[in-house]
Amino acid sequence: IAILDVVIRSVNGIDIAKMLQQYNPRIPVIFVSGVEKFMSEAIELMALGYIRKPVELDRFELLYCRAMALVENEKRRKLLELIELVANKKHIQLRLSSIISIEKVLRKVEIHTTKGNYTVNTTLNEISKNLSSSFMKISQSVIVNRNKILSVDRTTVYLINGEEHVIGRTYMKQVRVMCKDNSTENQ
View 1: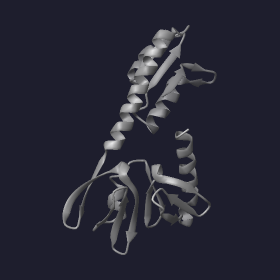
View 2 (view 1 turned 60 degrees about the vertical axis):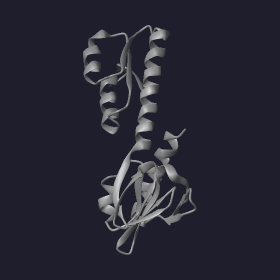
View 3 (view 1 turned 90 degrees about the vertical axis):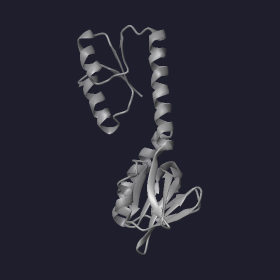
View 4 (view 1 turned 120 degrees about the vertical axis):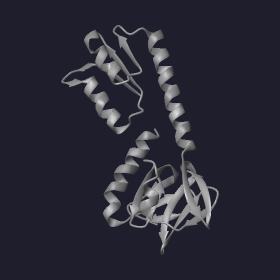
């Protein structure tokens, strides 16, 4: 949830909202301002609300509760996202939230989930096209679900099912940054 003043020293809250929406178009934005002339711009950005200063707590609480409901709804939507695959000549659907890791083994791809493992005859790149931002590639042959990581050290990612995957040298910096982002998101 972004709660922004329209005028923030040298930066414009409207510009910050635009940047945030590029990163996450579904982010609920609430503007607070003593200036009404920016209200139309805020509405164009699909802001959840525009509160005039001095802030009325009842109005703020109402908008904040709506924003929280949107965030919870987004979490539920992500839990229900599916990927369709062909495993053992059968079409299957897996919830993205149940996938722990995806690993290239010889010419096949193994998908490790909370309910079991599936072997599919496709490429890692084809599967990665259908994954959400919760997934990250940690080596040439492994993709992991960031939400299923127990810990990360300098060279290895440890997952909730006991799997350990070595981080590829070219992916080390990216993995550190994404894991740092993930730990601040979960706080």
